Image: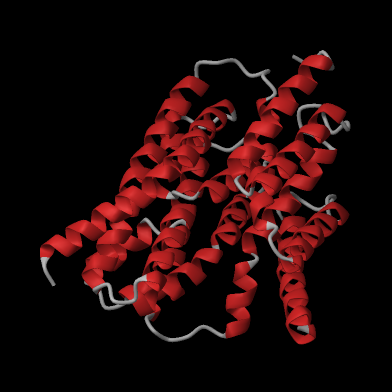
Length: 235
Length: 111
């Protein structure tokens, strides 16, 4: 394994990760603004983006905090949104499971939607890549995204702590959630899950914040799998 | 929001650790053992199972209007979902929803 192929893989990853900046920038900027507007300290808002690095979970936790949900439910809400990453972690093992421990530990930290999707597509398309080239590619994808994610949160947090409330910012979070959900509705099973989630959440809206949502999420996941299975049988 | 500083730090720390452990799980600890296929299938639906349920009550009963239905916000929500779905990219949803929100708030005198 020559070091030039590893370097090439890193820069290929960098090139493939760069377009995701377009998405990371506004999301993180808004997280910064809304975090501080909602009452988080600037340092807490930045810590959120640095330590959690998961847009949907960060916004989910923030929304539950705005509703004054119990601490356990705030954490659970964020964790459930992130459970899909168990699947990411599992599906990376056949490709980079043989990499050194420190690399796997670092990749775990950077293992979010964009890095995962870009990398797994690369690994599947080029099965002959060495393990070293695969991890280099993964770090390459993360390299342009992570600094922008954290940097825009910092900018947003500083801006947010300077502007007054009253700008309809309360509704930016729901809009971002819907914007994230739209592209996910790609099969009847996904649509069934989303509809189930909405219906159950509305039925249970009287329960303490976060509880109805968890029940709704479980029902929705089951609904998704049921529809998927039915479709497979009829196909 | 009515948490103490310490409580907020606890939330951030616990969520950060849990998120890391989820990402690290198979790569770092469990290794090549397969997860039950049913579990893998259920996990595939987590984002689409959580976010819609979280957003639905906010669309019907917005916090800023103290729970009174607001057509401007409802239309913005529709545009955000529609824009992202049609454009197959969250950015389009943010643009469509954002424009609809501020146009609606302006036209209904809320801005």
